Image 1 (tube, rainbow, N blue to C red):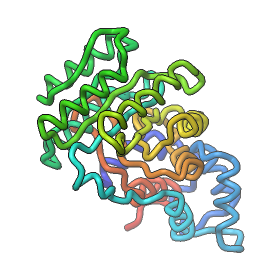
Image 2 (image 1 turned 60 degrees about the horizontal axis):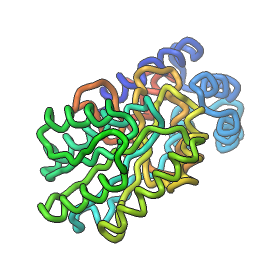
Image 3 (image 1 turned 45 degrees about the vertical axis):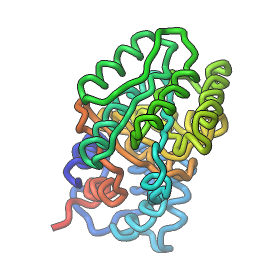
Length: 295
């Protein structure tokens, strides 16, 4: 796991190493400020991190580790996840965040690692290509899918997917939605409607609403996350494409602002390229870049 996160954060840590000393037990607070800002930690959060450091002019690896880890909320197991069938997840985010591929990775993980039956709902009826892409993924990982033609009511697809899962005794439902900007009011209203119709199909659903964020967006993703949270309420996050950016530090800002757990980190196009988020495994490569690798 630590090796996966080291690979994901490679561009971020390489960028940090350009600023940080080669190896040091302690660094100055000014140096730490510069490093965090270069890694795309927001300015306000950098100021807060420095505030929580010891009063001395220098900080140690353990000082920085303690504060950085504190920003991540641990994932609490949902009681419904094991005892309610089907467990329904609604997936949303802006276009290009890797939403459809992430859904396929989730389905693959549930089926092959958790031994759960899965059905997909292609409620992104805004683009024909999105339906076709999810259908191809469903065939590739061998899970059923409920889909329709472009332009049809996405809420009806969500309803039919949940109904089918209930009739067939399927464990997990994953519903795709149209990629949208958080500023598009008509698509925001559609997302709210899908949520309401899910609840009509089965009361209490969706059980978990997951926002997919593109890691290359850095701190720009914070405004997206806040807006989506206001529209529909975000329960958890999945971060994609973190291996393609030097802005890995933005995850601290995102976690701080939204106060929601990060479930998974995704990279690559393979269905296996999804790993549960581990705050220790995420923070350690950053500390290695700042202070040098521990012996």
